[in-house]
Length: 222
Image (cartoon, rainbow, N blue to C red; front, side):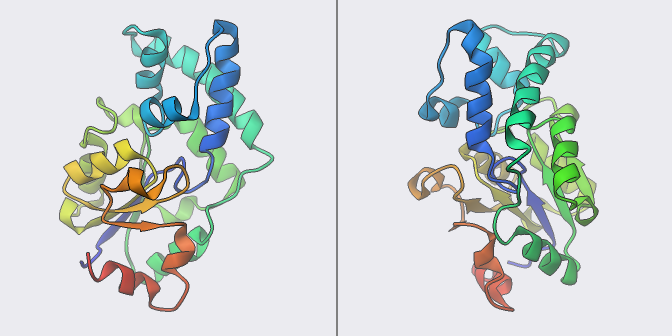
């Protein structure tokens, strides 16, 4: 495969933060006297938009304003919990530099909200690497619908078939594959067998930068 664009999910991909999202949901749900297991988080929360998750938790449809009111409460808890520990997934900074050296445009396609994207960039200054950033406010259907990846490819002005996606979530992989893209599954959140829909699997980005030509070698067989 000739990679003409690289698209990154954010949560669990750029940063290994899903355990903190689970903790923040548990803290948020305390007042509702409700629990959430790791299995429930993986199946119904990870990779999905806040609106979809809030509607799942409250078991009813909401307009955007009501859903985001609840979501912002939860996300404030998340940022407070995670701020002392935030760091990039191993090898990320080196991979971003590698892609830049190859003149491959990069984008973020996240189910998250803008304030969490800003939070990431405040702690890890990588904004300049990305030509396009698409978040949940820019789409009408969340992952696993392919809308977010199709839109990102359009903004990058590349064909979906030329895009390589990095994802940690099952719904994200399904979204990117439905858009016609190749996917690298990042094993921060799920076990390898759970991400069988990905074209290749990596523990973290260090596998793609271990040697000078690691990225080219890994992607050549896609």
